[in-house]
Length: 150
Image 1 (tube, helix red, strand yellow):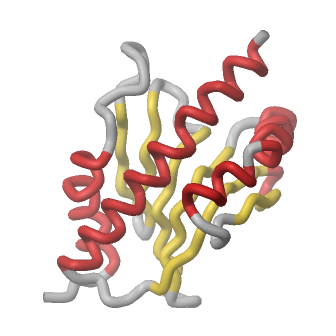
Image 2 (cartoon, helix red, strand yellow; image 1 turned 90 degrees about the vertical axis):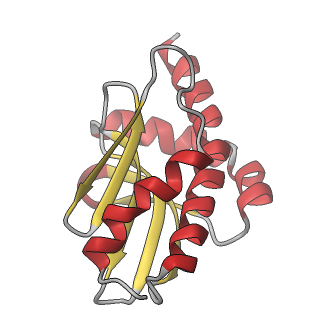
């Protein structure tokens, strides 16, 4: 059975949760929110830096990425620091991962996938890929944030 984008995204959290650690440290619980054609997930109270699964119906793509939507200065620092780790990230996730400045001074580290089919097999596939993406990026991001806070 295939779903429309909205129902697919609403079912995606149940496919992602088993793929992720419940927390990266005791003060960083996992949070998820579906909004329109995107699903956001993040650890801790600050949702400005989050993982996002975004359905682009116009281009028939599904984007999976880390979106840095904090202030412009922090986003630029995160982009610089992530660029130093890009070889390591691509080694684990593949060469389809891109890092770029984006809308409103934001930064995103992302990859795109073909959109369809949005079925049970795809739900499992995207859930597993999201799990690998977050398990790869989150420790790097946490190390970067700790370094930047010093």
